[in-house]
Length: 167
Image (cartoon, rainbow, N blue to C red):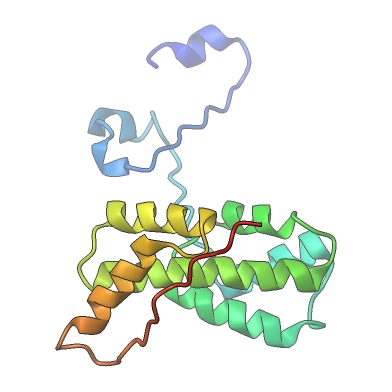
């Protein structure tokens, strides 16, 4: 990067991004090299309302769905880009918001399972399986294991999934 500015001829803005700022060489982070550091956080309620307004042109018409989504956003970590992708899937705000609620609930289930001792890799594998099969044995096994633990504050009742008929 040394000499970059003097060789440009015109002023340039260079954007560096990383998910692991702690792993970047400190020499690159010093003033004069990277003058501005911007942290992009996960989506929360206020930003969600702005996204919904921008993408779906809605504001207060779907208050009950907004409240459910905002409650879930306080529990899970999801980026604005992921939510924006969901908001683009349909022009019908009801359909989009209900699907977003289902998606956020899946993430919340994964978080609960990981809090109970499952690894992120196991939960990611299970979440992928859940998306491809409604009778996911992996999810069933995770929940069944959670149900059997003695020191749980709340009990999750799970029934064995039924085999889907092939028609």
